[in-house]
Image 1 (tube, rainbow, N blue to C red):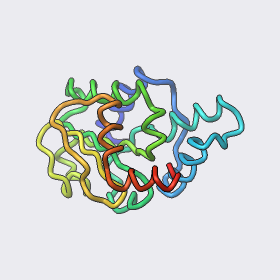
Image 2 (image 1 turned 180 degrees about the horizontal axis):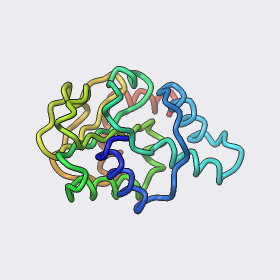
Image 3 (image 1 turned 120 degrees about the vertical axis):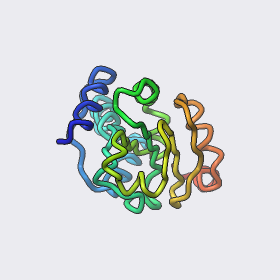
Image 4 (image 1 turned 135 degrees about the vertical axis):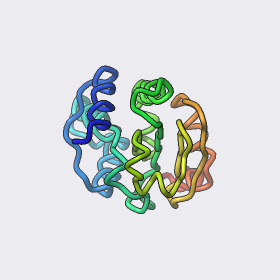
Length: 172
């Protein structure tokens, strides 16, 4: 494991309950997210465990944005180092209220290593700290240069045209 990822995961371990290992397929994420959002989990405890697992931050180093097309809404948190106070604050804010993010098919991606030049960093070209919320069609929904709480993020997502169509059609 890369040292930056280890530091990021260590910081998150202090903020949230432990997560279960996550399956690598983004399609599986969307199906499990929908099942959890629709109440199809066997027990509430299992749903809570899935929720934590599904929203466990994923390292951008091994991902591309194309993996999430029409499947999930990536919320990408960029920073120049995992010790950036804005990065830590943003991760705390996301961990505090996972349910609204889960309902909106959000996948959290982190990139705290500019020198690694991940495909996602090269596509979005952030400078310093940046929060980028993507739409399911792969377009940038919005960018913010400072941490935002889940309420603001979900309100922004709910204003996306694709999200409005999902709500009208009865889908999550």
